[in-house]
Length: 428
Image 1: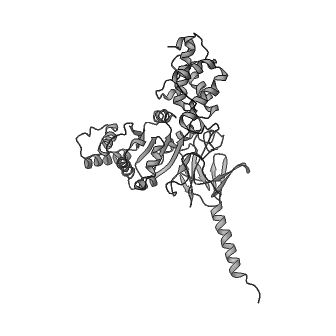
Image 2: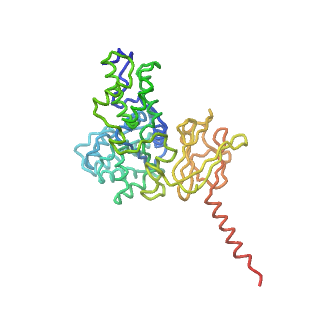
Image 3: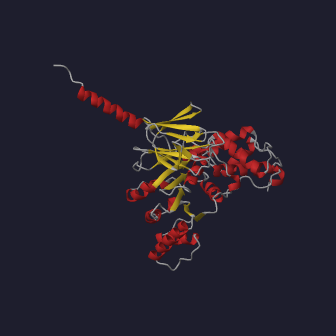
């Protein structure tokens, strides 16, 4: 094709999900962090949604490739199946040949396998891609599998990934029990214009561009208008544009080449084609996610704006006795770590890439260690999981987090006013 002309080692814009080409936008990095958190916590499962071509499958493949050897994975990609076929597929992924088993035997075999792997110190994970195709009956089997447990904890970690219709299924009244088991929903949006620019340059660099300018600067805005920042559409248009340039025997893609590609593909602008609102900026933290510890289905949002209201709590980040920043806590979760992909970044060598998380519900806040190297400490004692109380100070490396519970303070204030009103009486 055009590899020799552009002096590239491999095709930069193939549609197959190749982890080598993964570009971690802010949203992709957050989704990956949430998937990684399932390795350490089994109280519920994570749901990742996104439009067709947004990079869910590539993200999953990268996540699975980076798992340590003590994690046993069943990856399911064929989801237009019956409940029996689904259970068979899970057992096949775990190495069984279950095709003559009846349902009771399938469930017993799965249960015994999960408990055995747990007893041998392994972590067991089920990853289902294209989960929007699962029928309500199959989703109910997923819920039942999520309930397998020992005397100490749940055994199976579950990630469901799919198109936005998956959220509609999970919110159906008949699946309320399943929705209550979901720890987190995260919607993966399309790339913003600057992210799409970085995405194109990243894939070219991985393919061997060595920093050479292959796409002219004036091409990126047009590419974004016709792809909406959707990675798969971006790959298609960029690949076709490079083919157009190669017919001119040119090693540089011009705006005319992009327009030629658009004409050959018979595309109209993305907004006109889908009716979608182009998101030119990065989604603010929390906009695309929803925690379900105590919220009813439909609370919050998996995309679009979330009415946040007054904060339920706050945390002050301090070091050496000086406050560095203050962060409001609303229902959902806040990931704390060293890299910019976290909700709260602490740029310190004593802090792990994804160090810990704070999960906020209507009634409580919990801080959880995400298997960090240096841990989290409360009153000089290392803790893995702690229900935060007003005034708690949690140490993370050389930093401290002061937890301020607005609910508790409002309650105390109300109590004080009530006490005054019953003891201070007007004189006769």
